[in-house]
Length: 118
Image (cartoon, rainbow, N blue to C red; front, top):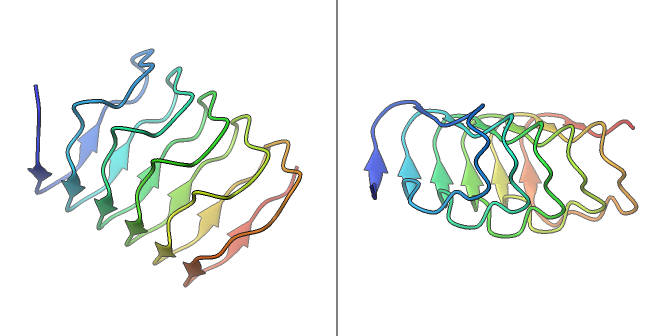
């Protein structure tokens, strides 16, 4: 199954997924892929107008994820050591807590707060 655009909410969380291949390229609402077995965001949407939830996975990098998120971006409870590869634009808050971050380098724009406690 392949989607190009979803006009509402897209949820694929809690399914033990190890890939986002086949996900929509754009989501007009929220995109939820939390609580899976993902190690990468490759294959997921490039633009999400709502919030993007990828917490509680096994992500080691944010490379391949969305370039723009209109709402909040959640990537907490993963294995991230860096925020490189994060969206270039986050319209809300950026939640990256409970990750073994070694670098806080981030070259994007966050309109809300950046929350990254260990």
